[in-house]
Image 1 (cartoon, rainbow, N blue to C red):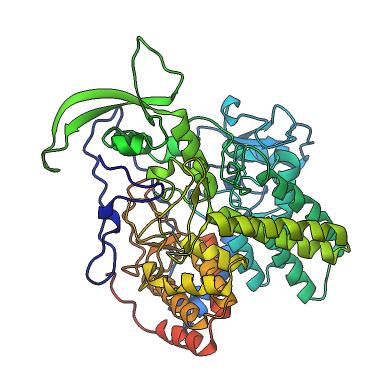
Image 2 (image 1 turned 180 degrees about the horizontal axis):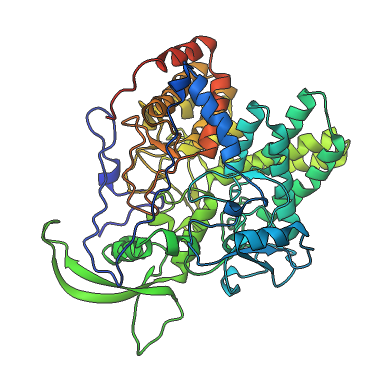
Length: 599
């Protein structure tokens, strides 16, 4: 079987139709058979009553939905729903406190009313990874001091990178105090749990998420300053935590070889607990995929699939074994000839890649190889652009605090990272930024929306920004920018458009003066969200950029399209703020028209 370059996808995935759009890539799982029946997790959708019943028109209904949504999505330790974890559906909920932290007296009454356990973590965490979540008797919520906004649905906790986009929306809506409390919660996580966590659940103690902490700090600080309440004492406090967050990303094992860049790397081992419980059959599907594709399975010189042999136990085996039937690929899809049964497990290296992909936030995508299995072998465009932005923010913060010597240090680090990004991640021939496989020492060819991150961070040259924007057609569809041109079955690939990457791409284009492109794409995405809102009175986690609908056909990972939705709400407000007045008025007029049928 032909081996494809790192980060590339089989030709059937990237082939184009005559209209320039990619053909659909179908994942052929020619193996079946499960050890247990797959039970899909219910999608907790709470449709709201028609907001126009009160006679409001234009953008008022969707603005009201978002405004009310901040309260609906806010969690605090004064209510029972905060502790519940929809992903695990455990019989009893647990609230964890740091090892040496005194439990507030009010917790006892809440514990009795809500019927959950209160426990302390077994040891004080000084650095990330000091507690293996797998050794805990039960998984649970990690205590935070202040109220916070959750994304919605199955995501009933405070997330690392979601919160930046939520905070952008809170600031636009004048909810600065709530945004300030969320940033304080991240300081608490760094102090008590070792790092900004993927989210405040115990099974996330082994990984973080894309680093937006300085961007969150400055969003709140600038909003307070604009209101006449500049707080340099708080900025000093924030600066110390931001330095600790940056340092976590710039030491082993999060370094990308000798590139001078960083990588995603979950410190845990084995299957991700939320996937085992809430993504029924996912790992079995992964094992089946690799079993039938030897070239993909041996991408880094070792197999992701380990055949079970009771006579020869393997240390490479992690997690549950899966029984799969091996089918004759020469037969048709409808009538495969399945003649052999194999019992297999997935290797520790696969699970390391899978966990690291989840730290990246892009789960599930095929950007770092099939099912993200090679994530920890790459220096990603997104992570290193964010770290460049962090270093420039720390330079700005240290100058504001009179730390001139430290500002020079951050300026130097940013310049070094910028040079390494230019060296390893910029492809002058293609005119785009790509991830770099530092083990194979080759640049990926997998087109991904993160090519716009260097524009958002301000590290691209004007010529590079012009080249990247000139290739916008790779991603642009009627409903906004797709994640990639490849339909893999993963929600972070085609045909899906996600709010956070829309915002970063569009802010990046505006930064370099490409207002016409930014206005056009911004309107496409905003009108897609608004049109679907008129149809079912909800805002969703993601949208189909091709059909301009909220219909999804995800086959890898969890399959739902969650209602809520924290970062879509925030991005809608932020994009609307930057849209020229005539386009805002056009969008408002459209909201008074009947919603079109889903295409």
